[in-house]
Image (tube, rainbow, N blue to C red):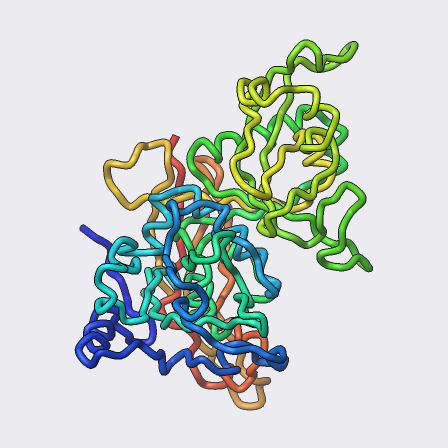
Length: 433
């Protein structure tokens, strides 16, 4: 049975599109207008900013050009690498992005029938335990030079990433609400999966090869089971977000892990007493740049000593702009946080090695207040657990999320007698051995 889809803010994509086609006009979204309120809630728009439809930006716009890939994602002037990293993981798996971009063939521009274009698109996100269908018009913010201000593709006439970002901004209140978010949240929103944040003990992993091997095996199994994996370097106290380390990596920046591989070294690369096998991870920077300058970077001695054919034989191929390989020991030396999003399939025929889901519903509501007591706090009426295995049950918590714009503004008036986000879905996911 197909999963039920809910219309965000009551907007039906098909009804709105048909209404536009009947009157012969392009859609203008009244709930996310082409104004400053859709862009920012604190700062002023940059000088020269305007909104343009794709046909005003280029002559022959397309939703996709030569399919969809991580090459289509370049972070713009917004600090939302957490979101772009999550989308880049999504782009590598058709079964996932086709859920987020439904009816992608029907939504594509048709140059033979321009009369069928209504300037309206829709995307789907997992929010509060259900898939929400978010409608947007095709007006996008551009700078004074006519270049897209935010997320864009390497191909100027491809617009799926910019339109997807706009829909996600609408879901969260405005574009600025996407500044400095959490990759864990984004992976859940784009997949409906269960995200597991891991905080790494860099000292222990660097010193103890057995711990490093166990962690590598954990990532390998997760990758084999189609989990989405991202990582970042948490800035220490006094360090600046997005400051660059000597090795080229960026603090507070989200990277995607696109491959986990054990490789056998060629004889000419073996050193006296060295390892014949290496644990390797392939990373991707959402900025589309290869920052890493250490061992196995594209300018390193290890990389240059091998021909392209030799690297491909070892499985050390680089598919997209911004990808690079790292020795896993170096990875454990620098990175502090990893997020593994395990996909939950709702099909009864899904292999038993994957995760399955049971849902428990609850709600956030004000605690009862008595005379002379302090203002009411919010409690969750639900008991739930997150089970990571048959014999490993731990108490789980959920992070209450609503409109990120409102959360950033700190609207304290909402906490009084109003209920917050009813029917919060809490998952209990179990992996069957």
